[in-house]
Length: 138
Image (cartoon, rainbow, N blue to C red; front, side, top):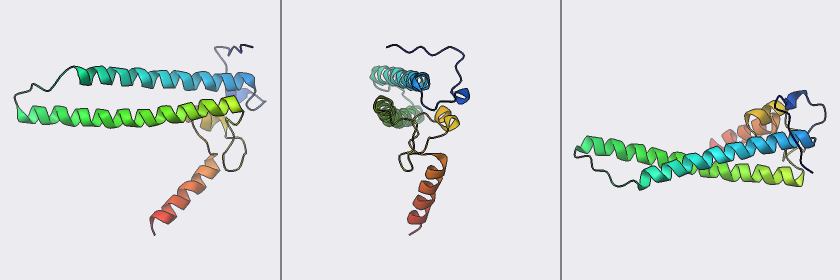
């Protein structure tokens, strides 16, 4: 069964949390985001494969190397993000998407709109961050 999401669909106005249309909306959103990251990664790879640095000026070479290192760190973050997107897609398939891992309560739609890979409600995330800060100070 194919589910079509209307072009003007707004999940926050939907009364039934994580109904099939809402799930399809977030699945599509995650897939688009994943594809964008993969395209950017592919462009970076092409850019890095174009050859060595032929700048005669040492300052220019250093600047280019710094830019490349920054780009590689950005790509590594994108790789980790793609992994989180894949995990979110699996949660859509198994029916756990949109529910807090900790409390099993629904995660607000506005939070999922802003961060579709969220696994914790705002309250649980805040508790988690407070615990991290407390343990980091030890």
